[in-house]
Length: 361
Ligand SMILES: [Zn+2]
Ligand SMILES: [Zn+2]
Image 1: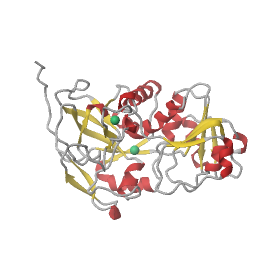
Image 2 (image 1 turned 135 degrees about the vertical axis):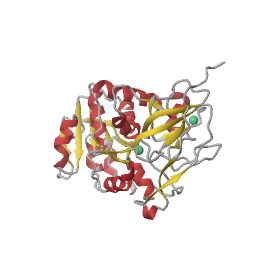
Image 3 (image 1 turned 60 degrees about the horizontal axis):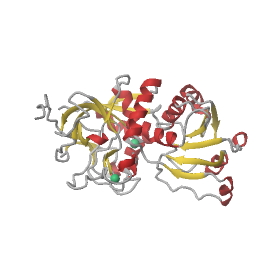
Image 4 (image 1 turned 90 degrees about the horizontal axis):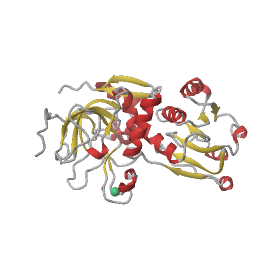
């Protein structure tokens, strides 16, 4: 007979919801219903939640239709409060996090090969529904989340909870394409955009031991930060001919730019070696530019990447703990959520806002 689980805690589920994408800066504290408790579910009492670009794309309607009311936030960290009967990986009190995905089918070839983020049955942390029960998913600008254990990540002791928050989505989103493209000794990588994602991409590229890390940004304003983060070279893409000294030299580029217009795609592609890859990790609201025919001549590949697997999340968190990868964060009370999303929309954070729990429970 399994031992009775001690100190299971019933949580209240409430959070800051947006009810209208036209009024995306207006949040209302609402109660919500989590999915029915399953054998593999974990209830987490949320302590911090990072503010990700996806949150703003969602509440503004930039990515399309939204299930309202919506509580966004998918850089969630806190402590386990309750576990289902079949959960063996976690116990009450454990420090854990949840990123942008809360479910997948668990059965398909992708789920069985550490590619669950590409499962056709993927369920996002908010603005989605659990298959089967149909319950709407709600994110981390809230008191608590109930999530299947496969999508809960244990946080190593060496990382503070608030520092771990941005790693759950942003960190994983850049780590996965880095390792899948062989980031490490002997490789030269480019990082386009020095923001929430880019500042973590530079740190992870360094932690993985890449020979060269070229930071690309519009202007010179972030040069000092990029070099402090670990870049070996800084290039301002606003300058005509910026690509010339770098032609056919980079193995791959991670593009974190959140707005497509203004990204010098053609010139950046020219900096890749033959068969080099240009990987988009942010999904801009606006249309991608059509590529010029001549861009094909460099034989570079253009594509995307989505989140990361749990296996990668665990590796990433351990690497962050071992090598001191630490997002640059500004912590603000969760009740200041409106200010946080406005600030992010305006490109203000250097480089990630993290909301600290202050909802009365
Ligand atoms: Zn699957
Ligand atoms: Zn995100």
